[in-house]
Length: 236
Image 1 (cartoon, helix red, strand yellow):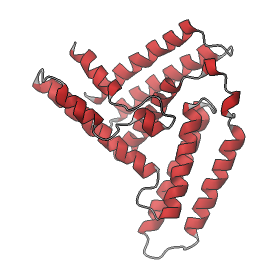
Image 2 (image 1 turned 90 degrees about the vertical axis):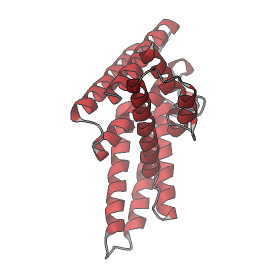
Image 3 (image 1 turned 120 degrees about the vertical axis):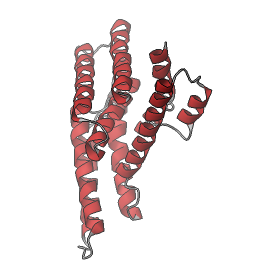
């Protein structure tokens, strides 16, 4: 019962599933998680510790996402990073690009962002650097537009925004864990393995261009199992 309640706390805390953007699909909106936690009974000190851990991780992921959107950089750079990040995540959630291609683009995004932060800490800076970064972001944005399907060409019966949104969230969770060291190598490995398994079955069910109601339910069964496994890994 306790693990089931914990699972529901995380699922209901991830925000509106009707929105298209990753941060609307998968992150805490305002104090949603904390509001929910206050309504849950304290079953044991261990239970309270798990909720505390999940709440702290959710907040740190929110800050990580703001960093990915260029928070703290001067406005033209921050805007370019935010637009680029949004475009990648939207295309992944909407099934307009593959998960693999999306992860490659997110990796490039993080590399450009890391180089930009390194540049901002230098005492003597190349004043042309911000313009070069913005040009690079625009280049990869054009490449994304060229390599992604228009939404009207995506078969509605193949769209799985809830599953895709969670895959993006979990991928960013692993990236965050690598960056800050908050997750152990073993935890990151288990999360990555679970993510790859879900993507493998998603491809299997969609490979013939049809996702019938039975296959969709089976995919969601694996999706829900992964969310439970993720919670267990995070609170260990």
